[in-house]
Amino acid sequence: MNKGIHAKKSGKVGSKSATFSFDSAMLVKKLLSAASERAREVLVRRFGLGTNTERETLESIGDRTSITRERVRQIEAAGLDAVRVSKAFKDSIGAFEEITQYIHSIGAIVPEETLLSALGKDEKSRNRFRFFLVVNSAFFRERETNDFLARWHVDHATAKHIHDALSKLYSSLSDDDVMSEGALLDRFLDELKEVNDSYKNDEVLKRWLSLSKHIGSNPLAEWGRATAPAIRIKGVRDYAYLAIKRHGEPMHFSEVASTIGSLFSKKAHIATTHNELIKDPRFVLVGRGIYALTEWGYTPGVVRDVIRETLEKTGPLKKDEIIQHVKKARFVKDNTILVNLNDSRYFKRMKDGRYAAV
Image 1 (cartoon, rainbow, N blue to C red):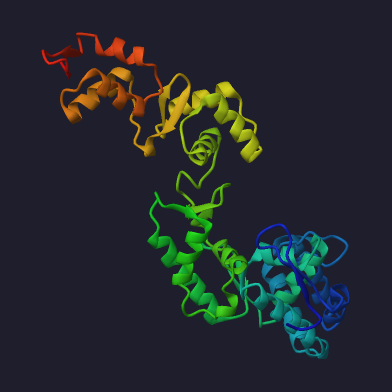
Image 2 (image 1 turned 90 degrees about the horizontal axis):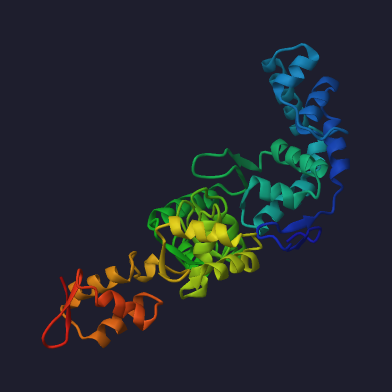
């Protein structure tokens, strides 16, 4: 890495920042001096390079100067061309090389917002670097699509490999697949055999994953399709699902509400949490206010339904055997099971002491 670049990690994944050996404000001024006065004014407004950091549209500039949108576009293009063939541009090759090396250091292809946030600490400096990226043909911008976020890259081959790998990774997942970060990164690596090994570290891999609109993670750092119920966290129900899943065993709804607050820093009222659990088929009431996950094998229904389902699967059973089976599926007292079992409308006691469904 060029000794003029000093990279460091911030707390946010994908926001590795850098400082450069050149002054970005001075470099902008130097480059703009190569354009005509009219083109310079358009470039300043288009890129937010003046005191006003708002980037103006072709239409707004045209309205302001009483010329057409197309004429503004032509002036902008002419201004950029003038900069690109200028001595000032050629003299700035070292600065552009620093930016290129920095982008290589964070993966060669980076989501646009991630890159700009890393390059500039505020909107004014981010606008300057956006100008540098546009004016130099060494930097390539890919537009946002249905599959990927807008992104910049400095290596066509690597960019193509990443796009292909992300598409294959997504296709390999089902809506039910939810896996740890490590497991997903391992699967991603399997699709990246043609990519330079120097890029293959967790930080870069996660930055590449963030390019995809179809792959995401939840607050427990579990990964899967962005549309998967366990990944697409929208409200109390989804947080409750994650809380119970993390706990690993049935929980009382008041405990679920408390865990949502402590684990995710989300306020969840106890009554609201109870109501949401009742309405969602992912949860099964297995005791007084105690909920389990359907995916653990629990099925909906009252104790009587559990007894009937057990007897239909196993055939007649003795009282103690029925109690043992039911208590695996419901958090209830023995007497509650016996009261249901002795209801002759649904169950009968056979001569040998075993019980069968009516």
